[in-house]
Image 1 (cartoon, rainbow, N blue to C red):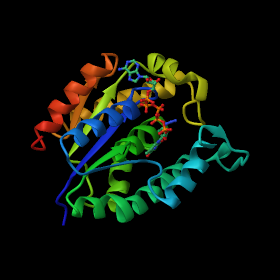
Image 2: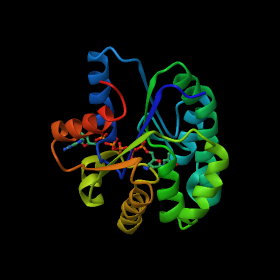
Image 3: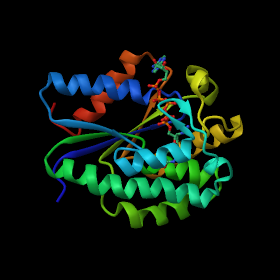
Image 4: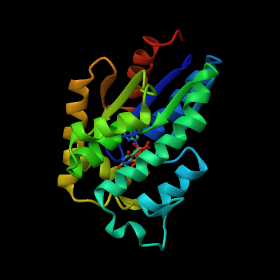
Length: 215
Ligand code: Z5A
């Protein structure tokens, strides 16, 4: 039975999710609230192995295996979902059961945007398929950091992984998909303009979180 709060962070490349989570973490610490920070793909031993396969990088360095050079979109989706299934069982649900706040860098909306829309598997198909994996482990709040992909990529261009290296059209489709999702799930997904200052992005995020949690 879920008792904590599950908050996910989504956005295109370089939107600022990792920086924002780091600031929220400090804020929660100052309020003496119990939290964990985790990410997808990853969060477990299996997830970190799968991360190396799908992103073709380890600790920011390219890995030599070429397993993922010709990765089929359906196979790619299954790898992200395998990572998620293990993550839910090993990390997310146990933390929520201990009343923790779970801050997760990317989650199911990324599968819907990247594999469902940008890789053309279909938004509704991925929502339906992934529902078998996530069951009721849905986020209570999703903060979507919205940014023009040109600006986002320019923030991270020195360390592009396999997916980040896709063409601009691909990244634009990801942004479009997040907007579709935000319209579909307006109660859960909150859009924040990621070109605002880090301080303003933090302030707006804390405002949304405070509607969920007594801060
Ligand atoms: N993926 C998928 O396809 N399907 C799935 O189901 C899942 C994921 C779960 C994970 O990569 C990849 O997997 C991802 C989707 C795919 N696509 N790719 N590639 P990742 O986790 O390694 O990478 P990422 O999530 O895209 O993170 P990122 O590119 O490193 O960006 P970020 O975490 O959002 O940004 P950041 O590191 O916090 O900030 C980037 C820079 O911008 C940094 O220098 C900051 O200081 C700066 N920054 C941050 N905020 C601001 C503001 N407000 N103003 C100015 N500068 C800022």
